[in-house]
Image (cartoon, rainbow, N blue to C red; front, side, top):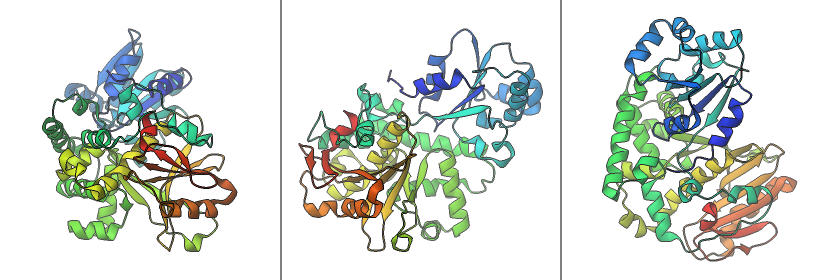
Length: 408
């Protein structure tokens, strides 16, 4: 059993909020987390039970009114989104903290008909795949150090082989427990097939599940690159609008994320196109047929996957820090870029560049130096993660940091 640091956030929300919604992709551990959190005071119901789903769909108001007089844990609520309006009525009649604990593997609250149903009554908590810190059983410290303006220090250095293994295995709980790379790959392939056949049918407006499947495979190839909807559509035989719609559906299933370009005052010099990241490198490798052996022999391929690996780890750690953090990328018209830019609610800006190599040159800091200049007084620190031995200063506020610092 892996520790889930998000459990603390759920407990805090249950203490003062009537409805708490744990959202995340299928098989990230939502049900396991819920069952760890509830006790005999709770009634657990899942809409994966088709009989329960049919009863709720036929009469959502009656279904909610006839629930036992307990706190209710309702799993996979996206299968019957009509119940959200009935839950709103129940909460308005009796507004007590922690009355409903919901989970969903598709973001039902993006649908216009239900998006406003629980405003002011609900807190959403994201559960992502396992972080490296959870896998290692260590408290996360990397992002907290960065937000204090400190260069993180690595407990492990020269981690290439371990890193390759982690990238190929991914961060979903179940495949991490499998005995071989071949069995891990089989799990991801079955996961994608089941997801397309199952969860996609719960979302409105799906006329071409094959097109969405192809887009997911393409997203695995293009992860870490700028999003060009015209190009995406052209590769799949879709128009730009349809490609954008399908990409939004993958986001709704928590499989892909888009991060916006970071902007400052020099708007005319900034590229405004967002980037796309698939949310798990294990899935990316399985969809692309990338093995550990192939990755060890291809530095360029490792570098392309490493950016998504680091982005996803930082996104997870950002869920657990006190100050809200938003994620961006930086790129200007000179094609100078920084892989990941983080901005806090108070306006502090932090740059992270990723490099798979063990050696560094001054030119590797070109993007971070440009970003430091453009961000000005908002700039706090910039780090270049690499497969090296030491945390080393490279000028005012710039550091090279071993990638092992990500997990302690």
